[in-house]
Image (cartoon, rainbow, N blue to C red; front, side, top):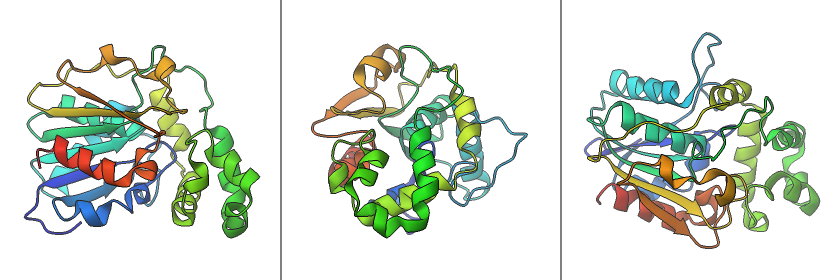
Length: 256
């Protein structure tokens, strides 16, 4: 977070991740924004309260309250990936006077059938993360282990840097809120109405294996004014595959 004269940009990560996932983007984003990289409850450095509601709408409300009460931010742009993309859309629906734009990067919640399984699909990655966090340098250089951990997320797993892998493994292995937030997702879709005054870009890679088009990219759930953007040769965590494109899309959506 730097330069309070710039417009506020709130970055929201996905399930089992942390604010560190935006690390490579922040230096360039800070040229145009005052950046706030949020840790969701039980993720990164954020605490977890068993008595809170952790559905995407409630999480959006928490972030809005936090930005106003702690940082005195009264107008913000928001960008989120996966679950964070869904939460970003909920923030816009809740407080359109506060949210100027949303860049939803491969957002969850647009599925044709809402998930009902008790165990998240990414549970195997979590198990591997819990094990491999103790020997990351070795795991990173063993292609079978790296493939097991990342091939469901990106077909470009061979190109992932050690730092990106290390940060994501630590975030997933230590995310105490992983099950709580998944329970908040089960049985739900994004179905909120967003004021047309809020600029919205919804971005999916053409090779998203986590939320593929045939299962989780239902355009009818989006506001009619939302821009739908497809990025070629790109998977679920768009920031990993196309850093500069991600920065450009966030800025364009914010009108910069």
